[in-house]
Length: 469
Image (cartoon, rainbow, N blue to C red; front, side, top):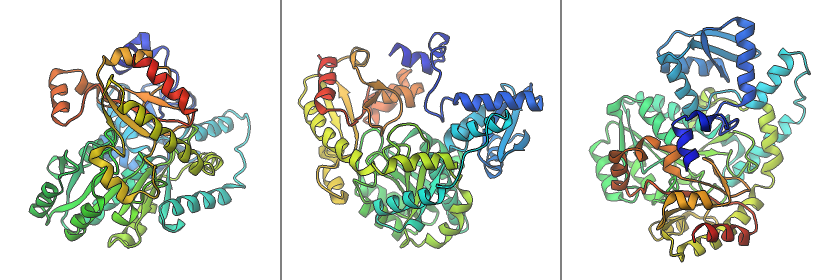
């Protein structure tokens, strides 16, 4: 926990040891090398440099930062420069984190190979076949056709692009109000806040309060654009009645965007109860933890379908071909990996639910969510890979002792654990007022989120048993 705090507070004693991390938060060293090459090549010595995936992403960046950056295109990469340590530079960092529009490490590697005349870019011969296979697998997972699936550079870019499409569609009808339903992943919430006027954003924390949601929608039906939520939510794994929620939004001519990443579309079928579904394929589909990629899937029965078909392809950032090929190498094992993870979660949840050092266990089959989850699950005993726990013992004691991988992501073949609020909302856990705010929302500041892997379940349980003593 000392190192978690050190990372959040940017303590030099901690930061000197961090050479890699989740790519939207820690810039990959190959992208840093691209920046260094370009700084020398273009003599941009007074700029903070950002490497964007496309020129259209650059336009969004400029609109967000409200700045006038230096821009140069090299091999399709947009190099954007803002004055060092400026407010525009700080906002540019935020933009790339929220929207997932930075280049990937594989694209950076190929750029450097060409720029430094080391090698030529690799072959794209298998790209069409690999893309077709990926789209077929994902279409089947969502119970739709492949032509309704759009691949993106990350799950966050999928959400950003679909949200922007709906913003445009609904604004034509005078609808600008967006609802965040439940406590959602930090960057989803940040997009809703920062790419909206304050008066056009509402946070409804109780995802189970259908009557309250219905009343709010009815009171704002003339200007409601849509509702954004996860199914189930991250990190509390809360599964609301999405069929009823969809009926509420449909009756109000509002959109419903769902994100089932926490449990995957292999375990739960939500597309028919939404207008669009977002999925971070960085998790589970690419379970080795070495590629950033996402998908946006459209419901062909949605009243917004034809408008989305024309807008979404223009707004998404297309994945680099080597990232697609890497996903193709792993996605064939998608179903078998999830099957093993589901099995392990069933066993681990039982162990944790009966342990004296655990106060509460949040998972798909917890009492609050089980009925709703089973209503939409594709097969029994398929809770997805995430369990979140409240401890009866000090967080630091448990966290420092647990012998599993630790970090902010989930959805890998190896078990990974994080003190969720410390990594996603450190500003809140670091103040008395923030902790009070979280507890009022039924969020323990010391929540621990567990992403269960495919290791032998006996080894996973033993690691937790020893740490919980």
